[in-house]
Length: 265
Image (tube, rainbow, N blue to C red; front, side, top):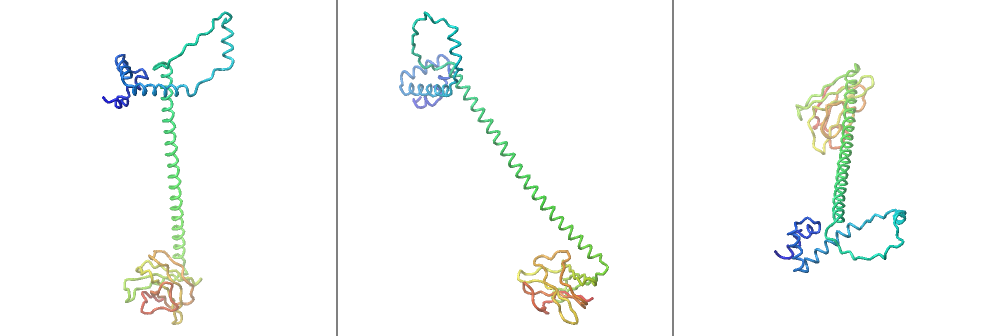
C-alpha cells in the first residue's frame, strides 16, 4: 500500500481514538517508525483533537482553590517536582472530544430540522393566504353574478316592460336579440346572446326608430355577447329597434347594408 493511501485509510484516526487491536496498534507504530510522513500525520491528528478538547476550558470557582488548600497540611511539604507530560494518544480527553463532536452534530441536526419545519410552515401559511385570496375573488365574482341576475329578474318581472324580439335579416338570418322597453321610465334593456361574434375592429350599435328616423341608443360591449341584460339609452315612443354592424366606436348614423336584426313594437 502506498504511504498516501495508508494515511488516507483512516487507520491513524482509529489509532488516536484507541479503536485498534494491540496488533493493529503495533503495526501503526511500526509504520510511524519507518515513515516520517506517517508519524507527522499522526501527530497532526493528535494535536487537532487536543486543541478541540481544550478550546473551551471550564474555569473552577475562585473559592475552590482556597478550600482545598485549607484542608491540606503543606507545612513540611517537599518542593514539588515538575514532571514533563507527553501528549497521550488515547485517554479521557479524547473521549470527551469525541462526545463534544457528537453533541455538536446532534445540535446542528436539530437546528436544521427546526429550520426546515419553520420553512415548510411558512410555505403552508403563504399557500393558505393565496387560497384565501382566490376564494375571496370567487365570492366577489359570484356576488356580482347574483346581483346581476337579481336585477335582470326585476326587469323581466316589471309589468310596464314591453318585450320586442329582433329577428335576423339577410345579412345573418340566424341572428336574434331581445329588447325590453320600459314604457314608464323610457329605459331600454337588451339581451344580445343570439348575436354572432364580430371582428376586433367592428362593434354592434343599437338604434330606435322614432317617427321614421334612427335614434342612437349606444354601442354594445366588445367581445362575446353574454346572456344578460345591458342597459342602453332611453327613448320615447319608439316604433321599432334595429342593430347594425359599425366600425369600432360606433357611427353617427346606421350603416343600412350592415343591419343584422330588427323588430317592431
